Length: 107
Figure 1: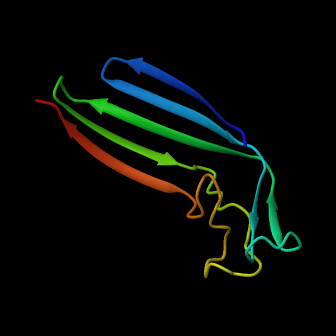
Figure 2: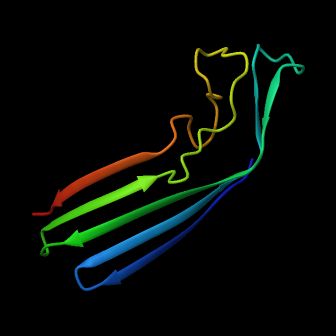
């Protein structure tokens, strides 16, 4: 029901840094077609993201970052009703941490 985000950006010379705290309120998932006796009730969670960017010049930059630094998979699905170990309707996903690198060229 509730989601919030707080983002901080810092710029210095050719570098920029970003940090984000995402808040996800409580949520639930029915495991067998609406049977209220078989429900996952998940607590609220804080998920952290970060990114560092180096700008080589006005056209080219390189970034590394991670979403869900805390590697939160959400609650386990005891029934494995979807074939997965974790609840599939988690608002922040069920795959844990995602790390990336990207190069950007503007022309």
